[in-house]
Image 1 (tube, rainbow, N blue to C red):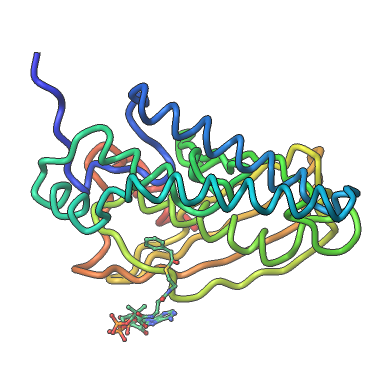
Image 2: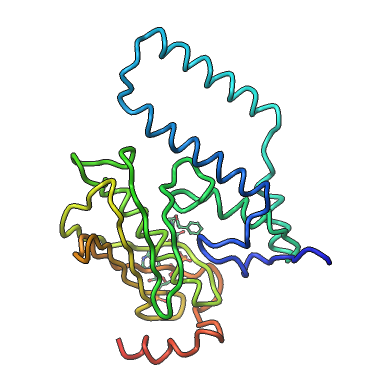
Length: 235
Ligand SMILES: CC(C)(COP(=O)(O)OP(=O)(O)OC[C@H]1O[C@@H](n2cnc3c(N)ncnc32)[C@H](O)[C@@H]1OP(=O)(O)O)[C@@H](O)C(=O)NCCC(=O)NCCSC(=O)Cc1ccccc1
């Protein structure tokens, strides 16, 4: 059976086909490195051990470097031609900042569609701390940017964040399950208006409004989400 081929427009934010064994190993490597990130915070080791760890890590980086990296532009070109492999999709999506399951700088933030709502969940460790015991506001802003960008899964076009307004209502604790929600508000020619929120134990801690600007053409719902039209017009 021939392997499925993917087009760029088939890719959903933070979602991939089932990972191949190679992609799963990258997820495991990313998780191991993320665990290291947590472990080195204020590590109370003697200086001799710190020197030893620096040498180990430098050695590992040199070892990794001999293999090079898959070429991002070549992957993108294959996907734009509708000839991307499953690994090409995971190579892009799994290394996205914060939501990528193979990225060492991701909790990861999980994102999925639930009817007319984009949902998200993350558990932020100590590396994401801002004020004592709280998630850094910039990290929440980035999370909301990723979350609200996923409202574009409902539409044919893809664009960039134009405006993101954020109101921090209460502290969001680290080392705690954090829930996210976003909805489409309006499609207005090349502008997509949406709102997002952050929740902890059912209490809202952040509110956001955003405008995304389509790179090419006016925003329109994908046929499979046509029923959202009425909900959007009712706003
Ligand atoms: C492209 C654009 C956003 C807009 O320029 P153009 O194409 O020349 O647009 P034009 O001026 O023709 O206006 C069309 C309509 O839009 C309106 N409008 C315009 N601007 C804004 C605004 N800012 N905010 C609100 N509305 C705005 C304007 O009034 C007009 O409305 P009208 O029809 O009259 O009612 C440009 O300013 C830019 O590149 N900014 C930087 C974006 C950037 O770097 N973002 C961060 C990186 S993205 C990221 O990290 C996430 C990511 C990750 C991975 C993958 C993907 C995403």
